Image (cartoon, rainbow, N blue to C red):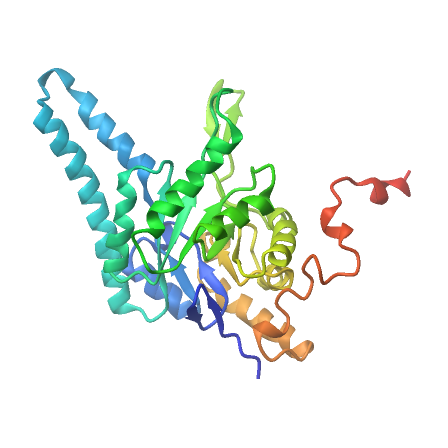
Length: 328
């Protein structure tokens, strides 16, 4: 009998499928439904620093002439506290109603004092915390090391305040992703989630305006994370990895585990097809393990990582020279 149980950041999971932070995890009812569908854990809908700051800014500038300094302080504090309280209540209620691990999520753009809410999440019962980080350089004066230091500063401040494990959800826009991952691990990250799926702009040429591109991921998006998970899991075996983006079926889950991921985060496919897809993924995983006589996830995790394959160049190769050289 295939045993799908696994661990992630010291948490015991009944299987390696985690539902990612999204609107899918913004209510107790939805989270209970995901648990019943088979999810091993969930990441709560993020609290967004940028969104809170924008809301504060809007309220303050709505009528600046009639705004007293004391009122400005009240708006800042009330808006933040109200948003945080809503997330804390969701966390507390979810912990009461569900038995699977609940991971809180903070979407960060700076290392300001607001990171202290991480302690509030810990006190409310979060099993772990995921820091969702993406800094967009907008000036040519910004130096690479200064930008990367923001990631380290956020993580370090949070780690000083909490004892629960912390993961960092990052993008792939780093000159040396392996080195950056090592820095995160050295500063207390128990895991990294690869990769963040960002809002991306598009242009509507009929209306001559900026619009949003496709929100959902596609199955082909797995290729980018697969390469780096295979390489980083081999280079940094003590750093756990949650695979994210492009995981639309059981085969994708299996591939990421073979590359060295601890768990797989799903989102778009659940939006598109409903929570029942999780059961299908688990059945595919079970069938795969039975076929190859793997008893546990650990029997094959990382079996095809960078150092385990016969030709590591299969992970390193960036060009299509070999593929196209024999084609007319």
